Image 1 (cartoon, rainbow, N blue to C red):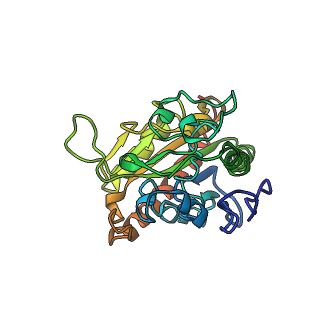
Image 2 (image 1 turned 90 degrees about the vertical axis):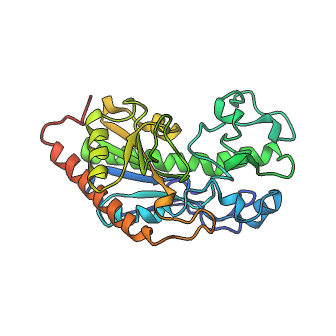
Length: 305
């Protein structure tokens, strides 16, 4: 992996014939203190991986954040970079700690530093997932420890090197940086005690990863576009939001979850008639968020809280 550009085609079992594992979509000039990230929209499923799996080509995509990279692609023209995964979440999940690994998946002992006891590992959703949605086992048999670690060393770590670099460069340029971590959620998601499905969930780790003002404005802007928006429940943000959000240092991270029922047929995985409208609304939302942060430069509320 060439650090800094994601431009490699070899060296990782299962991805040697695939496109580059990830890409940075850059504007001609970065004019906004924002970085967008789409870590779960990758849809390149190499034959080697599919042959390891007991699932068919459609079932294995059930954990994918379908077309989220396309929904948010307009932000690049607005002056913000976007990091996009091409590898699938079912193969490697970069929204986890680097070594959240299930020892039951591997044919030998894991390194002592592996986190084998996390709740996410117990649920089958570690760095190398055991399951996709609805408790569907991915693999026919056990993986070699060497293969598992190679995915982390050769794809996970470079992915985060690039994300960290984008955030740091943005912080240097503007004195603050706002990371928008872009995801989708199943249409079946409901809030405990609620009767209405959320269209969009904004996660800020209950105020730990972004300023209250920023989260409030995100909810308000999306609500004004006609969406039912909630905050933190049931998704408050994953490893990426938690790891990179440091509001006290002017580093803010928000997770945004889009209900797939708004834009995709979850049975056929085809875009629906709602896709174009949602994409236009998200482009509008991003523009208005950027304007809010730009105008806020005058009073410094986001620089350090």
